[in-house]
Image (cartoon, rainbow, N blue to C red; front, side, top):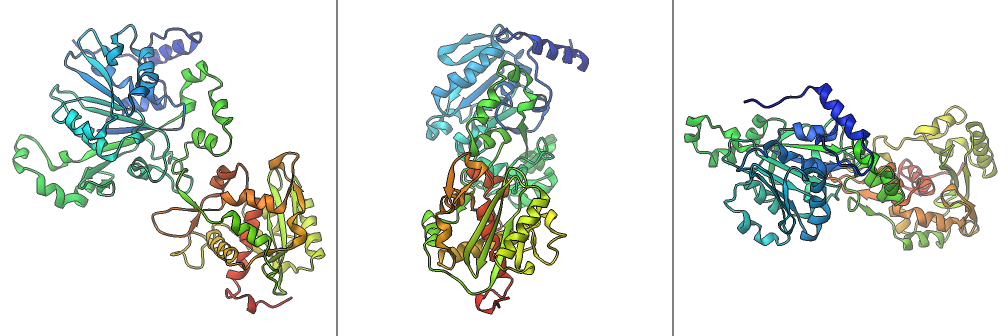
Length: 524
């Protein structure tokens, strides 16, 4: 007797039936949704980690995984969660929506028993020191781990060693996770799938199978590759040391010691059933505001501890109360914006900020005139004017052709030290501020400004710069280069664009491009 197979067209009608049910109705068509859930259930990697964006349906699809084998009376699946108290509100509650009517629940043991005798059991991993004792020698053909980052790297591999069976079926090992910081072992384990610049999963890599061999006890002691052959070449000495050549007689191979792995990112857009049941879910996430809402909705990894602040509030206070750091060389810098963000332009005498204007919602022609008037008012030559070329700054290229153009991602003077020009200037400016080499005119300190970020509030320049300070962070990167976090991440930190801070740090361009010595700068 073979297995009954359905056409894709028929499967789509079942999915449509599910979507047509009124909210709260019992769903009898137990079937994965198109996209994320279908990819998870058709993935044949030895180890599969799923997650990322909130609302993708991670827990539900994990509990669909064991259904492939529930006709086997000897089949057992274990679902794990770190804390026992979290099992009931997570794995157990979700399982009720899927298994009710098909299996008998034993809630006191968090166990489902199917008519064949197959079982799905949920257990906790609270005392990780006992994990090895509890599961050494145990054969578990199907393992599910909810919220993987909550357990240790050691526990993960201890459980993986028990993921085996003598039933003649393929082992299943699936774990879920939300985005974590760079310090968490899960981030390091799946780092190949994460874009270091955007801190998001690389779309083209989600669902791609890789291979690994763990030759040591640390997260860094893993050989990775795009094929088993590549991994074997990297870990040949370790594999050859333990492989028994007699296994080849029965069709075995050294490649059997290498594990396949895949990461698949969940997509809220694919979870149509949940979207219908709770249409306000995304709105609730968004209402958290600022960094957390963007992190949850867009799937931002490494956000909590992936950077270090460069300036303290005391550093900002020093700059605003410092003696004038004038040299006689006058320059101007503009962070250009035409719509919702601020157009900020500042005038400097040496490293002393003595005039500033902040505009909002100006058109390109108005912006050109405001810049011309600002330069004229402050007696600053066009060639001593610097503006950011990225994006909207293109509007100023023609009328200010002789001016300096600042491209954030331009090559640094020494690419081995800095990730890009913006990062190089940021370090120079931060260093100068900390050393008391920048100052702000007393007349500017308490001047109040209205910006779209604070609605009807009027804030002093010092308040505005202080509020933007948290956006200025250095990214912790493996190559050791001094690199600022991306503009996108800066907005996550403070909820808006750090326009004034960006204008200020760009001023360091004049220092970096004039022999790094203010004494060599000539007054115009």
